[in-house]
Image (cartoon, rainbow, N blue to C red; front, side, top):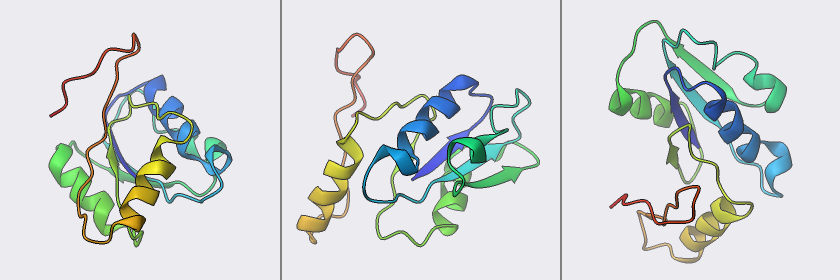
Length: 124
């Protein structure tokens, strides 16, 4: 998982807590690319997940460049790019990984995103 952060406050901590070692049976490599946050949102992530890899940029490189930076830092067979305000449902990420593993011809997966009120977020 690659999460790009810029002053995301508690959203980042909530997101990482759903991806960390206690979140599922299959370990997921989490890379956080911080784009020069000044709110401290990137601090203490290792308390949530001791294996999280935090890459701190001295300036805001933008979302796309940060995604590429995170992608280059992982050797995971599948990479998911998440915004820090995403709070994955309990098994949604593992279901996506299984779907990709079961279908080797599929290269991209776009899940349905829902707002806190249950309505569909228009992501595509």
